[in-house]
Image (cartoon, rainbow, N blue to C red; front, side, top):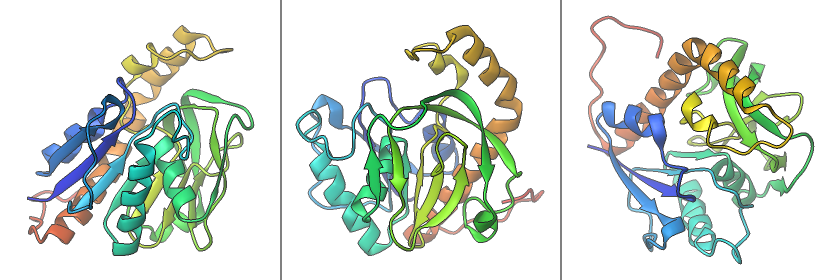
Length: 242
């Protein structure tokens, strides 16, 4: 079938629609509520790994003691070529484990739906190829990757946060934005200096563009997971861009 370990780092920060899209693709999700004390596996035996967002830096073990185990599993995934997707904190964790730099409370914070520019390097990327030049994505962060790991491929950027998406090796991706989040979730966030109603309405307006794109990217990731698990991928009857 193909099973995916998902590390959840906050009560409200679940896999959201990305989890639903992965299940629609036939994958089995193993969501570990690490923030609630659920134990992480001693070793990664899953076909893929996803680390979700949370209000921590990747090495804040004093506030989030499970992050040490998450970094250990992340290092194994990178070494073994296990498909890996990191969102917000998860993306920062991938960068740090691979030798990049993450800085807390840096630059201008980003909140709500933001236009993300897809870089030319994405043209040959397994997940980001063929996307429009600019794609809306939901943001909610003040910490950021400030230095990519050596050899990482820079895939997407914004003016406020240059490292919006990147790939480490052949099968690990980090993103600063939240493809799993719908506009309804934005209403739960506290974003100082932002009008909650305004950023919610902007996200609603962007949904018809953003949702199909992030569903497509998630589907491409699911196909990689199935490939690793040895699950045959059936061709589409009416092909659409993969």
